[in-house]
Image 1 (cartoon, rainbow, N blue to C red):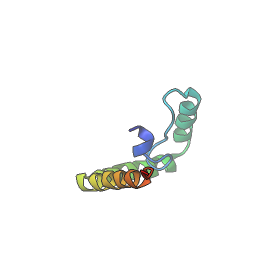
Image 2: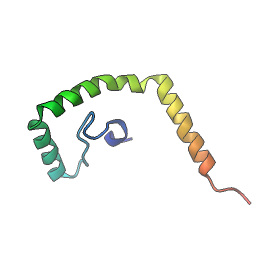
Image 3: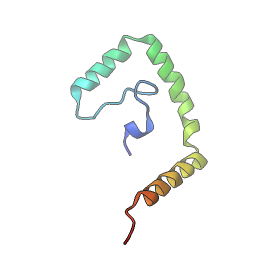
Image 4: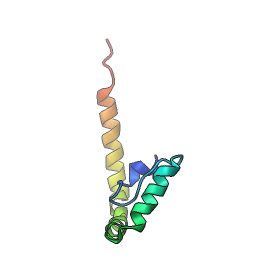
Length: 76
């Protein structure tokens, strides 16, 4: 599980590939130049833990497992 699976780009974080230095610089410049974006992301990030309760994570995991189970090829 990577950061892009937990954080939403430009909502709670600036998500970039760890190997992409240019994207990292661009993301930092974007944050440095936009106080409103920083404020919105700060609020969204503080609300984020509410999305990761045990119950919600178990439900998501069960949903993903069910989707994968239903998507498997039928045996002949």
